[in-house]
Image (tube, rainbow, N blue to C red; front, side, top):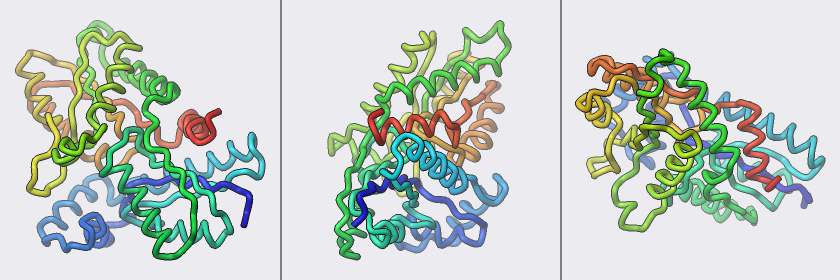
Length: 305
């Protein structure tokens, strides 16, 4: 077996074309068939953002850059892979490839900063199931959370500072900064899941760094499962801000790291439409995407250096 350690970057996944949306949706639903209306609704969202999102391309770029950074500082010690939860390259296929490459030690790193049993735990389950199914004998070291890493908070803080320049100088002290992250079913609360506390702690820490005069936390992009989801929802929060007489909002989707449907549609189209109806100027920060500084952050998370 190779003495190298594999680094397995993991992300949600995204279809590459409209004709892949139905199968992608089936994968998200754990094999259950969505209704034709559900497929059309999701397809319409993808059409609205150009038919696909850059999530896979960006993740591949991050993988390549991280490999280069690790090779430069730790030559011959790491091999970086990426796998997706719901679309190709699927995590189980990548686990098989890691095993075929003769590597047994794997650092698992989901490209989401905050831990939940549903989100990050779901990535670990996929690796564990593949390990068992294919008898790959992989030793997985899962990094559950990296939201406390100072480089992460500094990056989000710098993005906020940059985005405030989108507002006229004379009103910047009137901007409400709205931190947001993907909602999850409320049942996570009964588990004592740390997700809400991690999000609030992370938002508070970043807000204090910048001495933000007005900031809030909200959830976005809740699923259509028929069960209660964590709130408040961002669209309701926008309505509340308008009712308070606010005019300027900067959304900080710090629960996400790159542009995909929850950013390009849920914020840039749906959120801005709602804001326009309410008479709000809504802007958002630029996501970390494949910025070399983000790759450097991931290198620190993986190596501790």
